[in-house]
Length: 192
Image (cartoon, rainbow, N blue to C red; front, side, top):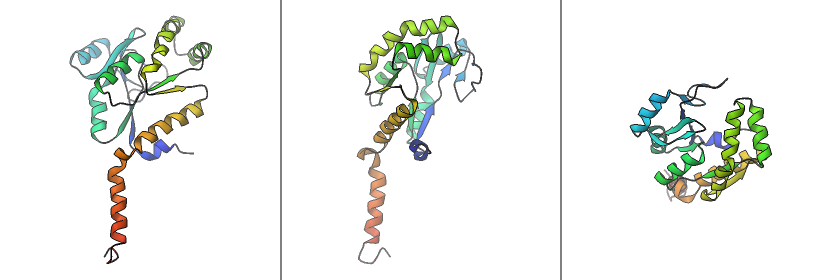
Protein backbone atom coordinates (compact mmCIF):
# COMPACT_ATOMS: atom_id res chain seq x y z
CA UNK A 1 0.00 0.00 0.00
CA UNK A 2 1.34 3.42 -0.93
CA UNK A 3 1.88 5.81 1.96
CA UNK A 4 -0.80 8.50 2.27
CA UNK A 5 2.06 10.98 2.57
CA UNK A 6 3.44 9.91 -0.79
CA UNK A 7 0.14 10.83 -2.43
CA UNK A 8 -0.11 14.23 -0.77
CA UNK A 9 2.85 15.60 -2.68
CA UNK A 10 3.28 18.43 -0.23
CA UNK A 11 5.92 16.90 2.04
CA UNK A 12 9.64 17.11 1.35
CA UNK A 13 12.54 15.75 3.34
CA UNK A 14 15.30 18.14 4.28
CA UNK A 15 18.71 16.64 3.53
CA UNK A 16 21.21 17.82 6.16
CA UNK A 17 24.82 18.85 5.63
CA UNK A 18 27.56 16.97 7.49
CA UNK A 19 31.31 17.23 7.81
CA UNK A 20 31.77 13.48 8.15
CA UNK A 21 32.68 11.30 5.20
CA UNK A 22 29.97 9.15 3.61
CA UNK A 23 29.39 5.71 5.05
CA UNK A 24 29.03 2.67 2.84
CA UNK A 25 25.94 2.96 0.60
CA UNK A 26 25.28 6.62 1.49
CA UNK A 27 24.58 8.84 -1.48
CA UNK A 28 25.37 12.55 -1.78
CA UNK A 29 22.17 14.59 -1.82
CA UNK A 30 19.99 11.71 -0.65
CA UNK A 31 21.44 10.85 2.75
CA UNK A 32 23.45 14.01 3.41
CA UNK A 33 25.28 16.80 1.67
CA UNK A 34 28.87 15.81 2.50
CA UNK A 35 31.22 18.78 2.88
CA UNK A 36 34.56 19.29 4.57
CA UNK A 37 34.98 21.01 7.94
CA UNK A 38 36.24 24.28 6.41
CA UNK A 39 33.24 24.54 4.07
CA UNK A 40 30.87 23.73 6.92
CA UNK A 41 32.42 26.39 9.15
CA UNK A 42 32.17 28.98 6.33
CA UNK A 43 28.50 28.16 5.82
CA UNK A 44 27.84 28.42 9.56
CA UNK A 45 29.64 31.78 9.75
CA UNK A 46 27.59 33.04 6.78
CA UNK A 47 24.32 32.07 8.48
CA UNK A 48 23.52 29.44 5.84
CA UNK A 49 22.16 27.01 8.43
CA UNK A 50 18.79 27.20 10.12
CA UNK A 51 20.34 25.04 12.82
CA UNK A 52 23.69 23.36 13.24
CA UNK A 53 25.69 21.62 15.93
CA UNK A 54 28.68 19.46 16.54
CA UNK A 55 27.16 16.02 17.05
CA UNK A 56 29.29 13.09 18.18
CA UNK A 57 32.44 14.83 16.96
CA UNK A 58 31.10 15.88 13.54
CA UNK A 59 29.22 18.92 12.28
CA UNK A 60 25.64 18.58 11.09
CA UNK A 61 23.31 21.33 9.92
CA UNK A 62 20.08 22.14 8.10
CA UNK A 63 20.17 24.51 5.15
CA UNK A 64 18.15 27.66 5.80
CA UNK A 65 17.58 28.18 2.07
CA UNK A 66 16.35 24.64 1.43
CA UNK A 67 13.81 24.73 4.27
CA UNK A 68 12.52 28.27 3.77
CA UNK A 69 12.41 27.80 0.00
CA UNK A 70 10.24 24.71 0.35
CA UNK A 71 7.99 26.43 2.89
CA UNK A 72 7.64 29.42 0.55
CA UNK A 73 6.44 26.98 -2.15
CA UNK A 74 3.70 25.76 0.22
CA UNK A 75 5.43 22.47 1.00
CA UNK A 76 5.76 20.91 4.43
CA UNK A 77 9.32 20.05 5.38
CA UNK A 78 10.33 17.03 7.44
CA UNK A 79 13.60 17.73 9.24
CA UNK A 80 15.44 14.86 10.95
CA UNK A 81 17.71 16.44 13.56
CA UNK A 82 19.10 15.80 17.02
CA UNK A 83 17.92 17.59 20.17
CA UNK A 84 20.51 20.38 19.91
CA UNK A 85 19.38 21.22 16.40
CA UNK A 86 15.70 20.92 17.30
CA UNK A 87 16.09 23.44 20.11
CA UNK A 88 17.73 25.92 17.71
CA UNK A 89 15.11 25.35 15.02
CA UNK A 90 12.17 25.72 17.42
CA UNK A 91 13.65 28.95 18.75
CA UNK A 92 13.76 30.37 15.21
CA UNK A 93 10.52 28.75 14.02
CA UNK A 94 8.23 28.45 17.05
CA UNK A 95 5.25 27.42 14.88
CA UNK A 96 7.08 24.28 13.75
CA UNK A 97 5.59 21.03 14.97
CA UNK A 98 8.05 18.88 16.87
CA UNK A 99 8.02 15.10 17.11
CA UNK A 100 10.42 13.26 19.41
CA UNK A 101 11.19 9.70 18.35
CA UNK A 102 12.86 7.48 20.89
CA UNK A 103 13.77 3.80 21.15
CA UNK A 104 11.78 1.58 23.53
CA UNK A 105 14.78 0.89 25.79
CA UNK A 106 18.50 1.45 26.29
CA UNK A 107 19.23 -2.17 25.35
CA UNK A 108 17.27 -1.81 22.12
CA UNK A 109 19.11 1.40 21.19
CA UNK A 110 22.44 -0.33 21.79
CA UNK A 111 21.32 -3.36 19.75
CA UNK A 112 20.23 -1.14 16.85
CA UNK A 113 23.42 0.93 16.85
CA UNK A 114 25.62 -2.17 16.90
CA UNK A 115 23.41 -4.01 14.41
CA UNK A 116 23.73 -1.27 11.78
CA UNK A 117 27.43 -2.01 11.54
CA UNK A 118 28.09 1.62 10.55
CA UNK A 119 29.95 3.00 13.56
CA UNK A 120 33.06 2.10 15.47
CA UNK A 121 32.75 0.96 19.09
CA UNK A 122 33.92 4.34 20.44
CA UNK A 123 31.29 6.21 18.39
CA UNK A 124 28.57 3.89 19.70
CA UNK A 125 29.82 4.35 23.28
CA UNK A 126 29.74 8.15 22.79
CA UNK A 127 26.16 8.02 21.51
CA UNK A 128 25.02 5.79 24.36
CA UNK A 129 26.75 8.01 26.94
CA UNK A 130 24.64 11.03 25.94
CA UNK A 131 21.42 9.13 25.27
CA UNK A 132 19.82 9.85 28.65
CA UNK A 133 20.60 13.58 28.34
CA UNK A 134 18.97 13.53 24.89
CA UNK A 135 15.83 11.58 25.73
CA UNK A 136 15.15 13.67 28.83
CA UNK A 137 14.33 16.52 26.44
CA UNK A 138 11.19 14.75 25.19
CA UNK A 139 8.98 17.11 27.24
CA UNK A 140 9.92 20.02 24.97
CA UNK A 141 8.19 18.42 21.97
CA UNK A 142 4.59 18.43 20.76
CA UNK A 143 4.49 14.67 20.11
CA UNK A 144 6.42 11.63 21.29
CA UNK A 145 6.73 8.38 19.33
CA UNK A 146 8.30 5.29 20.86
CA UNK A 147 9.76 3.37 17.94
CA UNK A 148 9.11 -0.16 19.16
CA UNK A 149 7.45 -1.29 15.94
CA UNK A 150 8.53 0.42 12.70
CA UNK A 151 5.15 0.03 10.97
CA UNK A 152 3.26 1.45 13.94
CA UNK A 153 5.73 4.32 14.41
CA UNK A 154 5.53 5.12 10.68
CA UNK A 155 1.73 5.11 10.81
CA UNK A 156 1.74 7.41 13.84
CA UNK A 157 4.14 9.81 12.11
CA UNK A 158 1.95 9.83 9.01
CA UNK A 159 -1.15 10.49 11.12
CA UNK A 160 0.48 13.48 12.82
CA UNK A 161 1.58 14.97 9.51
CA UNK A 162 -1.78 14.36 7.85
CA UNK A 163 -3.56 15.94 10.82
CA UNK A 164 -1.49 19.10 10.43
CA UNK A 165 -2.02 19.21 6.66
CA UNK A 166 -5.82 18.91 6.99
CA UNK A 167 -6.53 21.52 9.64
CA UNK A 168 -9.09 24.12 8.62
CA UNK A 169 -6.56 26.96 8.34
CA UNK A 170 -4.55 24.89 5.85
CA UNK A 171 -7.59 23.71 3.86
CA UNK A 172 -9.50 26.99 3.42
CA UNK A 173 -8.46 27.59 -0.21
CA UNK A 174 -9.20 24.02 -1.28
CA UNK A 175 -12.54 24.02 0.54
CA UNK A 176 -13.45 27.37 -1.05
CA UNK A 177 -12.83 25.83 -4.47
CA UNK A 178 -15.14 22.88 -3.71
CA UNK A 179 -17.85 25.19 -2.32
CA UNK A 180 -17.50 27.34 -5.42
CA UNK A 181 -17.98 24.31 -7.64
CA UNK A 182 -21.17 23.34 -5.80
CA UNK A 183 -22.43 26.94 -5.97
CA UNK A 184 -21.87 27.05 -9.73
CA UNK A 185 -23.50 23.67 -10.31
CA UNK A 186 -26.53 24.48 -8.17
CA UNK A 187 -27.02 28.03 -9.46
CA UNK A 188 -30.45 28.69 -10.97
CA UNK A 189 -28.98 28.59 -14.50
CA UNK A 190 -27.35 25.19 -13.78
CA UNK A 191 -23.83 26.59 -13.77
CA UNK A 192 -24.08 27.64 -17.43
